[in-house]
Amino acid sequence: MPKKVDSKGRWRDRTVTFRVSDEERKVLYDCIKMSGLSKQDYLLSKATNREVVVQGRSPRVCKALRDQMNEIYEELKRLESSEECRDELLETLRVVAATLQGMDDIRL
Image 1: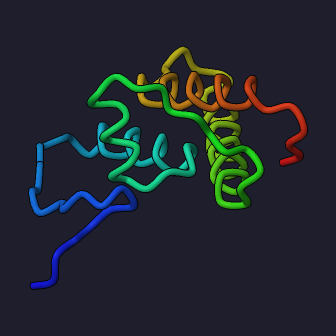
Image 2: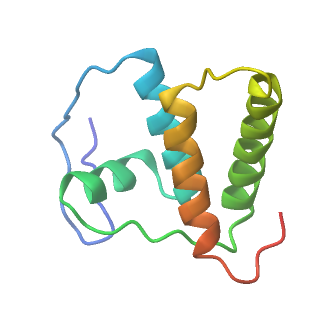
């Protein structure tokens, strides 16, 4: 097996795993998509308490934000006459709002 070396010349041959629920996995993957980072870079940043900086000009980030906003919009329409609201939706909405707040020139 060839060595896995990152951009700083570090040999990364260790794997770290953990278990999550389906709901937690969805929230995690939504956050990763909206960050524009790789899953590894996002998780390392969060695990080491480093700030995740979103690159707003990335088409991938814009698409992820647009998709999340569409999903939230559909869920809010469904909940319009109900008092029910999923915690995962609220967390995703918080992440989307914080991301959009940090972007100045983005058109979704």
